[in-house]
Length: 194
Image 1 (tube, helix red, strand yellow):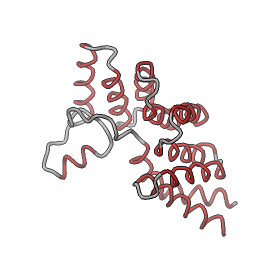
Image 2 (tube, rainbow, N blue to C red):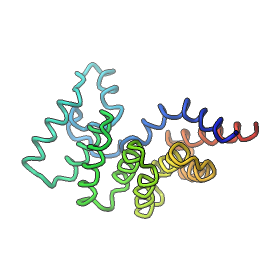
Image 3 (spheres, rainbow, N blue to C red):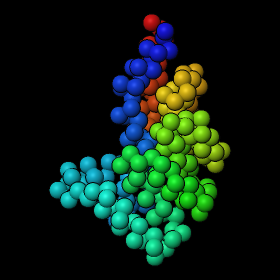
């Protein structure tokens, strides 16, 4: 079946790429780079000769900050990122849900929460969070890429995924996210011809 072949190709080529683009927001205030917990930071620090800080250390630091300010949305969000990076998606989702209570208009948190819930095997619920984020900001490119990812990999809706990736690509074709969406579309179109 063509659908299974397309999903297999996407899975092989896309899971690694998509995690970097949709896993967590990179647009947050970096603050202390060692505790930000966003994907790619450890790698970029490593390339610059800076020490790599383990997620366990990051989590402990952020939890101690949370004791001082229990409702700090940035710390809650960063804790979600740290757990996400450690593939502890249930804990990540819990902290993202708490962060949304204090930053209900932050589309990136909905993106991160939706992807975390998807990785827990609850793609339909994850898609609902993504849709909420899209309602907050329909011009947020990353969330459209995530929507396509969840539709394709979690729900087998390739036509819906294609539409989401087209939207992501159209918003800014020259950005990293736009190029990733275009790559998914090219793979989709190539496999659909077969």
